[in-house]
Length: 327
Ligand code: UDP
Image (cartoon, rainbow, N blue to C red):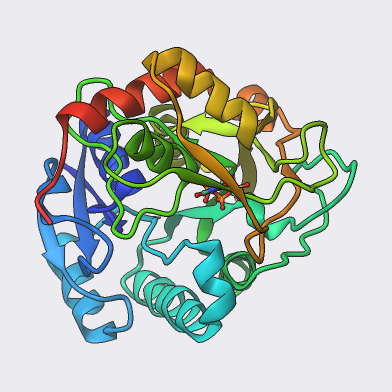
């Protein structure tokens, strides 16, 4: 049996990754401190509670399971919060990842799949964002992820750590079978907040900024379905097993949608009104983040199945109505 250590396996993307790994014949071992994750979300493979800042605990888990690879999702990921409390991001994301990378190489586990972000590119007007684009993050979240990417490159040179880095655009949707889904507390992401507003679980959605340099004044993002995203991770793992070397892949569809467009699609999919109002910009937000790369498709053989916006909203809506974890 091939164990894969999944940090953040109790979180949104990590829990979907555990399901994809289990379906592909691996045993996902979730390592999570449950600060933003949910015990109920760990449905595939064993669970080990622990914090990346606790190196001894990491060593224990590596010794117990002897994982063939690490998939590293555990991170704080709120752009807004990273601007008001950058220390939290540098400590948890960067120091935590350093512990993990060191523990992995010390345990002779040299295949590493890393969850990075398009936020590492920053705000680049009229630039096609591909894997060779310069990385100029404008918020501490993106900066922390870029630092971890740099760390992986250094450990590849010094300790032979083989890595695949995925730079995600905006992840959305949920497992269509409803076993796992998206549940953040507090919720900060556009689609789940909008679904809450639609069914009255919270007040109207606030659009963060209507004066951006885009056709309708609101920010543009490239949304990718969480199930497609985690499928790419399994392909990334196989890529490493085949000895194909260190590589960076963007994961996005290449189509951008503004906040207003997402609202319109949600109205269409749910057949309900979307209560919203217009507010100020959120510090740290980029105007437009859309992937300009097909590398994951051409090199990894990635075939996104569910990444059209209406499908993503429909899957998120189904989970929103039927699925939940206990807080
Ligand atoms: N957004 C918004 N209102 C909200 C939450 C998000 O207008 O209550 C916007 C946000 O400014 C960004 C887009 O929706 O342009 C996606 O934000 P999200 O937090 O979902 O993801 P991010 O792009 O920050 O990773």
